[in-house]
Length: 390
Ligand SMILES: [Zn+2]
Ligand SMILES: [Zn+2]
Image (tube, rainbow, N blue to C red):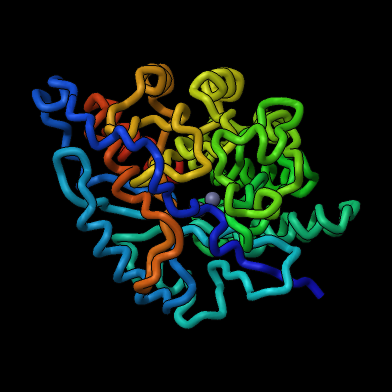
């Protein structure tokens, strides 16, 4: 019998470090250009491609809370996000606690029902419960994937799309444990079942959303080579192994798999979730530039915590703590204007929110972008990549 554990904290950072950047409050400078140019108002078309419902309240309640949050968020010179994709969080296959959920959850109403009740506000992404735990369990069991299992997996993935889902997610290739009770999860991106998922993705022209910490070197020692001393209160660096293996090489194999079979790069789209929230120090603008050039089907979903997390690399955060866009990120955005979307990745629902807030922080980016990039990132790219208006 499979035992699952829902990664309730899977893609949520630990609380921000109160000691971070004590000089911040003394900074009063701002770019005069920021106040001269009124940002574009993209609120009427803005899409957030990555939000979660907390599972400690009914999804119907979480939906009402998220709609209120969508209406209140500042988006450039406007207010409100028009449409949001709801993703079940990635579930691991190795824990003895709890149960995961996916779009056909056993909660009443189900995630699918709630999204269908709000067709003007929500679209659905699915597979984080069903497919991610399937792959992760196979990895942990070191199971050889035979033709029967491969066919069953592809049938399950296809069935999800048959039910009206817009993308596969949230999948997790490499998730780092950021707290003592926080799980570590690693499923290589070139695992046979990930390659099978890519085949279904291309056949059905739906994207895959993947949580992936970047290790762009042979190995990263934990915690010694992490960006900051974020594990100072956690024995042995959370539940992580002492070394993280390279995660980018296998990711490139997945990106290449089936790409030639796609009529259009977007038919083989893989969306790298949470770009802008880097906990290894390797998710640089330079790495993204290299991967965008090599893989026309790679896209990035931007997440910016309202306050920086204790483990994250500040150098690889697109916005400084003063809220200014870093020049290397503006250059990257201008080089690849069709590759970026916004995905806040907050768990919404109930009074005890899970994890750090990231919705306003993510959408604050709008005020820092030239109008054409704001329009592309907020509206045109997500609607095109996820087929939202089709
Ligand atoms: Zn995540
Ligand atoms: Zn997420």
